[in-house]
Length: 239
Image (cartoon, rainbow, N blue to C red; front, side, top):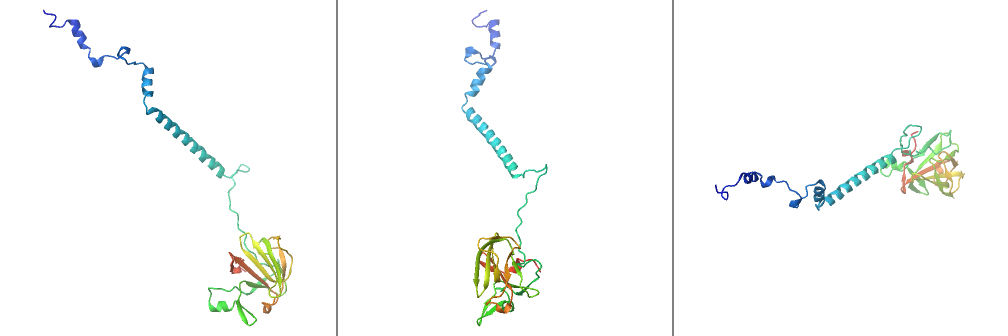
């Protein structure tokens, strides 16, 4: 038997070990230990950016949650006595009739309606010195025809006090809502410029004036909104 042509038993056993079944070892230049595998993973260039992006996303998420929780706590009203107090908007002050308590007012001359009928316009004109003028306020008289105390229809600051034969003594008050109220045809005034007056506070007494002499003793009441006269009866309580 020619041993050069036929492999021996030991040679056959060696052939049974296939290359792909051979386990790599340090001699092959590959370290199979867990530490070596970790070093291989960390050597990947994409790993560090991925870690940074993941950490950044986590931090941003935590900051967002804290911001929302802080905003919720700030918006919630502080509890008092163990109960949550409702948040309410401030109530705007409404107008009152500009007369002293106990006086029954009546309107004897109304507001000139610029978009009203010709008849309504004619009924709200003032005749003076052979001419007619639109009535830009209302005339208020006491039901008994007697002089009466004039009260502030709404709280505000006295911005002007005048005295002319044509309109009599006049008080101008600027209220917090931006309107300007004018009280004219007064016989006397009990406030001065700069005074802060409350609603219902007496500011003068009704009287007469040359411009509306036919009205006798009365109060001329005018309201200006954004520089334009408006019908005071739309602001005053219904009689």
